[in-house]
Length: 230
Ligand SMILES: CCCCCCCCCCCCCCCC(=O)SCCNC(=O)CCNC(=O)[C@H](O)C(C)(C)COP(=O)(O)OP(=O)(O)OC[C@H]1O[C@@H](n2cnc3c(N)ncnc32)[C@H](O)[C@@H]1OP(=O)(O)O
Image 1 (cartoon, protein in one colour):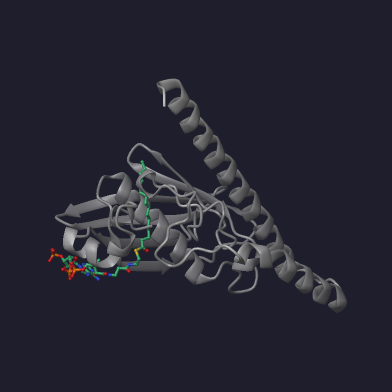
Image 2: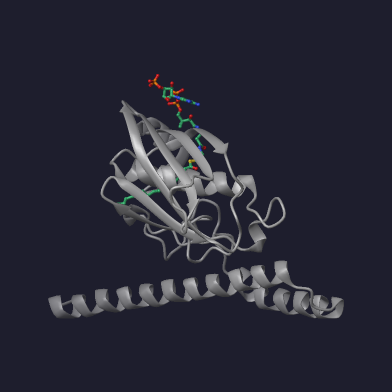
């Protein structure tokens, strides 16, 4: 194969991968809309039964070619940190808000709005959801500092309830690196009042030794899982 033929082939593969990622995000959007409507709906009971039947029909073809536990999604790129089904940030995950994360210097910044599906106390977020968001934020901050690891401890202080249907701002920052152990602090506030902390967390993340990575992720060897926690 000539260089230009090879180049065209790689380009076509990239295009196909991009189209697949777009389709996965589109399906994720549709599923999140479904979950939000299904949680908020007061439609007549018969409409709920019809919807359940139509959803089962739509789901069936998706289940025909499915991956197993040790097989990463074909559209993911773990080495580049592309995880389309991450339950917190994944564009393809029905479960994810999704939380959008970026780095501003030393600070990791996140944004999301939680829908009614995340309700704990009426009109506020479930405490476990806040902990989930913070685990991801803190883990990302550890990784962005060059010290990726798995969560071994997450202390969460709930100062004020987190309102649903309200844009949120999350932050995280590494406060200590001690060998394999990285300590990260973070918080949740509303975007409108970023200075008023609603939930604060401190997490400890531990980098895996090579032998641990092999034991935990060996079945996915060669796909980059061993270097990524999230
Ligand atoms: C530019 C952008 C790039 C960004 C790029 C990033 C993208 C990527 C984002 C991913 C974001 C994912 C965020 C979610 C991350 C999860 O959710 S991970 C899933 C939840 N966590 C787990 O399942 C971990 C379960 N735990 C384990 O498997 C084992 O504890 C581990 C992690 C393998 C470590 O085992 P171990 O080596 O036997 O641990 P051990 O020797 O006992 O402890 C190691 C050290 O940690 C300390 N330690 C252990 N436990 C604790 C504790 N509870 N408290 C304090 N210290 C402790 C020990 O004291 C010890 O310290 P030293 O004595 O060495 O000083």
